[in-house]
Amino acid sequence: KDKHDEPPGAQKIPATVIIDGPDTEIIQSLLREDLSHVVEGEPGTSFPLENEVQFRIRNHMASYGVLRVLVETTKMDTPHNPEDDIRERVIGLRGAKANNLLVNGERKSDVYRGTFVSVIQGKTFDDDMFELVYDNDGERDVLDLAGFYDAIRLYLEVGETVPEWNSEDWAQAKRKASVVVEKDLVQNSLSIQERKKELDSARSISSVLGKPPEAEKGKKRSREEISSSVAKKKQRNPKSFLGHRVAKYFPGAEEGDEEVLYFGTIDYISNHDDDEVWWHVQYDDDDQEDWDESDLRRGIKLYARHKDEDTKDDPV
Image (cartoon, rainbow, N blue to C red; front, side, top):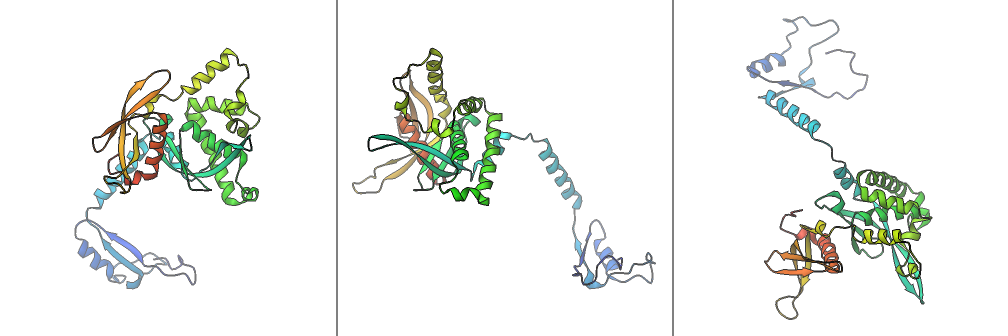
């Protein structure tokens, strides 16, 4: 022990000596005794007092070392998935959504803000669904990847409801995190790259996302614009919902009983034509039902709110 190692007044913490291998008891006994009269120490050092050192006996330390090396090597060999990294950083992000309202005969767009609380993972990243909880009433919305991108882009433009909040540290941190995720989305998704071009060409994001459907009526469009519009409507492949877990309330067995929540899985498309798509839902109690798109959206939203109650593993 070097007498000059510790500054004056420093708290003395016993040093830990780990003993491994055969004859650990003998080695511990020898180390506990002051053998400075037998073994000459280096100049400027002294044998530690009993309260200055503690001994720990550990057997088979080599196996622990090998395990540690294997774990670290496995971590290094595992390829990094940028999509999983994005999913982890979604939780806690702020989002905004523009809803069209009819007020005194006039169309107005109102912006609702909320926080993303979960990701419902799909078969691919483009199939993921993102759960947004709104600030004003706690209502939940489930958005697809394009909707999620629109929500964070709109939030970056409009900020918080109270303008003064935008200068606070927490709001600045949320905006910085959203900017990073927004850039990562563009890098990892071709569909988001196309959506970015569309939004970037607009004067403001809110003017695009808050535009009422009637605004385009009467406007003559080119063949290219019509083809682009049709392509966007068909952008989400109906098959991408296969395997998703869903939920639905059903009446109780007796009149006056509370509604019962049932879980199920979308297992195949029962009908698909140019006008309408129907998805087949297989419930966990072996009942079954066909859903249209509005049923599908409600079922996914309801599942997102009650997924912790689902006792069956999500097959997605």
